[in-house]
Amino acid sequence: MENNGDMDLNCHATGDVRLDKAIYQWITWDKNPQTRAQIEALLLDGQVEELRRRLCSRMAFGTAGLRAAMGAGFALINDLTIIQSTQGMYKYLARSFPDFGSRGIVVGYDTRAQEASGCNSERLARLTAAVMLCKDIPVFLFSTYVPTPFVPYAVKRLGAAAGVMVTASHNPKEDNGYKVYWHNGAQISSPNDKEILKCIEESSEPWSESWNESLADNSPLRSDPLREISKKYMEDLSSVCFHRELNTKSPLKFVHSSFHGVGHDYVQQAFRAFGFPPPIPVPEQKDPDPNFSTVSCPNPEEGESVLELSLRLAERENATIVMATDPDADRLAVAEQSDRCRWKVFTGNELAALLGWWMLFNWKETHPDPADRERMYMLATTVSSKILKAFARIEGFHFEETLPGFKWIGKKIHELAKTGNEVIFAFEESIGFLCGSMVPDKDGVSAAVVVAEMASYLYNKNLTLHQQLENIFETYGYHISTTSYVICHDPPTVKRIFTRLRNFEGENTYPRSSGGHSIVDVRDVTTGYDSSQPDKLCVLPMTKSSQMITFTLQNGIVATLRTSGTEPKIKFYTEFCAPPGKSDISSLEEELKKITDTLVEEFLEPDKNNLIRRSI
Image 1 (tube, one colour):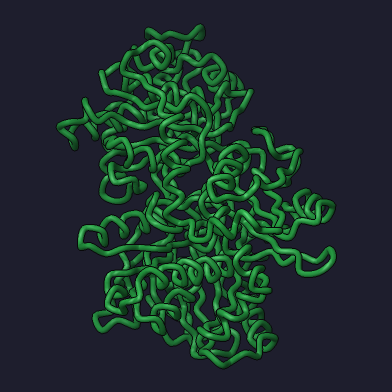
Image 2: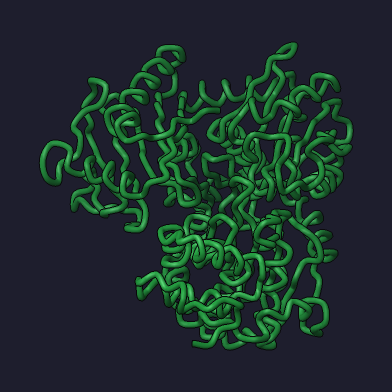
């Protein structure tokens, strides 16, 4: 048996034909000495189960593309799996676009790195470029790290056939990912994702030139779009800048943390484009650090505990607003100082209420004709707050929901644009916001500077962000929500939990009550069932590959349980949507907490199923 490694594989066969074939392929194909050594060490140690976990399954496209830990194996992110993925991409794009050879592909990357496996985002991006370049496909490869939204922006601006961003966003430092954008700038969704996976499986053996990383430096088909895209992006921000003159006089001070990621330079530039002085950076978190040394997890969504450095700096600098972009700068967290050393950290749903109101307020200024509202839309994922639905009901524009994940929002934006409709705001509750139409994906850079302008405008009217949020709720009805999760590393346990919910009181019966309140409707997107529809079929597309069940209670609370598309979590979302005029907040919050706690205990059974509760 011939192989490129130094070991005799016949002496280390496991007896599992499928696994032995996968081991042989890995040792033969992988040219990264560090990841190849990882597999060889596991083989020598007889770690059969670990080898099977790493080698006998392949990553699938989730809500944010391919995402997994870095390391050796077909189930992880590494040089070989990125090459395989890109070869499959090439095959599918060449079939889909007759002019692929002239349109090319955009490639960007963040600053993640792992010493043990020799994997880092820049190298993985250069290998992505090499695969395309060796097939004579033009590649727009950024020469340095960029925010994730720069890739879809560049795809649209340059007329590329597709884009790839190497990032794992806010995931733990061990992870990396491969996010794919279609020619319209939206993340790929079904059926393209499934067809690409088929092509990856058909093109699994690396082409010899796929490993030629130097092509990224030497090929005449490689160009660097950084200067053009940065310039045009900052110019296009004017489409969501409504009060530049007021911005130049604003007395407000802002603090920004880039969470050890890519956001610092770009947020600074965006503030200047709006007429603001640049925000005060958190020095310990300003520069890229793949170890995310100063935070327990690189996710600003976790709230005050991970924003500690930002909040303390703001207090010292007498800054009113703190902003944090996640490591790839596509999401945004915001906190406001309410009084001396007390902070209001806004949830994603609360910030969406503010941004949705702001975008509507300014849109109405330039669209006085009520007929214009017939072609204006706002969008949100189905697990997000229904506050935009309340806006639409009262203001007379359109609101639509999508499945979780901004790829579905991007797809819906594209569909609506075809019929002459305009989406002025979209969001997902996990602090992902899209203001305007620059990028059909969430964008933390533009959202940060839009929040700054909104805050400056409100403060000029002697209003804080928090006070304006209260005004919004008084007008459109209080929307009190809770979002959290439990961690489960055992897929069979997750499957058992959701199977139990579908057979709760006998076969094919869902729970009928929770916390003493009747459940009036059940929607199960995994199976396509919706009890509220006349035909009992879901309006949203069925997604068999993930779990998601929504319960509507008699008292108006909506609760959703779903598996994460990027992490080993079961997420739960509950919201109380009160009509305008009902403002007894404490009783609403108390009732929501009671229902949420009961639902988690009864439906997920965390202790019985050894689920890890959220610790932050």
